[in-house]
View 1 (tube, one colour):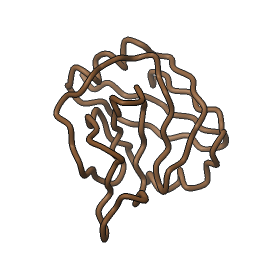
View 2 (cartoon, helix red, strand yellow; view 1 turned 180 degrees about the vertical axis):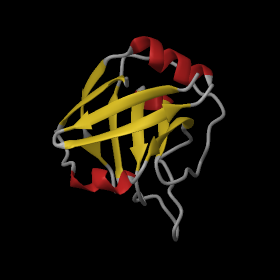
View 3 (cartoon, helix red, strand yellow; view 1 turned 90 degrees about the horizontal axis):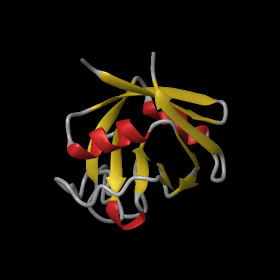
View 4 (tube, rainbow, N blue to C red; view 1 turned 60 degrees about the vertical axis):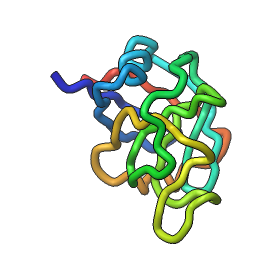
Length: 124
């Protein structure tokens, strides 16, 4: 069965589907999670109460990927290039574990400023 989450950041709400990594399992079990959006290029990230370590770290991710960044215990949402990107790629600061993907258009998250409250919960 698909595990879907709802991410609300200010006026923006998106849904995502989690994959079958151990990291996704740990995040699913920790829901609901609240945080404060930090932005880095076209990425939102914030610390979460999950210590998943590194798992299948990726240096480049795809538009709409959800990643877990071990150095900051951070939930990351990628919706475009970051300051580390080269060309059209989307590159995190260091490898992340991709644990899910936004459904629909992730670029709506460009409207979310740093400091915005973010709520993540299981979707109906």
